[in-house]
Amino acid sequence: MTATTLAGPSDVDLRRPDIPFQRLVAVEARKLVDTRAGFWLTASIGALSAIVLVVLLIANHSEPENLNFADIFGLMNVPTAIILPVMAILLVTAEWSQRTALTTFGMEPRRERVILAKLTVAIGSGIAAVALAMVLGAFGTVIAGLAYADPAGSWSFTLAGVVNSLIVQIFGLLLGFGFAALILNTPGSIVAYFALPTALSLVTELVPWFKDHIGQWIDTTSTNAPFQSSEWAAGGEWARLIVSALIWIALPLTLGIYRVIRTEVK
Image 1 (cartoon, helix red, strand yellow):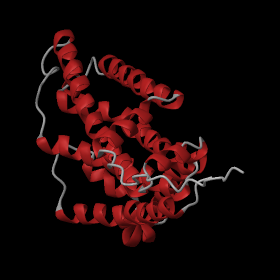
Image 2 (cartoon, rainbow, N blue to C red):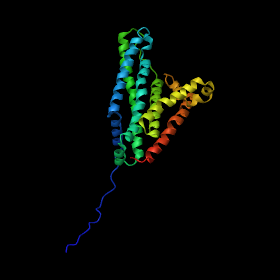
Image 3 (cartoon, rainbow, N blue to C red):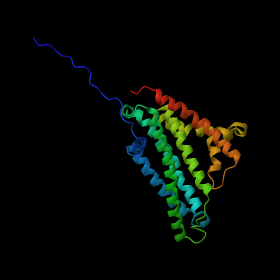
């Protein structure tokens, strides 16, 4: 008679080393551009930037004073300011719509590290966007200087203009990121990002009382306006920007991070 021997549980070391944070950031950075949507959005940034630059050089042939580095650099920030927030939204929502969250949070169960990596990539892309705008601005300034007479091609610019561009870029990115984390749905997040601030801006412009008492503090179009120049913003303008950021970025982002951490992955 043969006796059956039951093997005991094998010794498994569950203490695996942490995934390096820089690897998480590298993976999320690849997700930003290494998809069909990410590729075409990135390509559209390049195409729109080229179109804006060509139109700017042609349209201002009779006004060469507008063809300086500061003005060209400012306009080169427009395509990225429009498209990058959409890419930040996709960076968050694609995990849930494409079901890759099953893999992502399986490899790194601590979801707060993944969210932090995504935030790092979003902010880094904003910094890269401003750097790209500076390169394109320099290229446009050289072309303007060669094609037109003085004062075209002037290299005058201010540090405030660069800092302001960075603030506006990151503000928009975090705004889109917060909506995406809160809604976890690509169409809904994109609609919320474009529609809600636009609707509030319309109310601000159409209702004077609202504009004078509330709109100037919570309307992102109004609070961002002083930072779209080459001059340093005043203290009151900084205060209004911070208040609008608390309402439109900090609150949705906090609730969204809580939702991402607590939502069941299906």
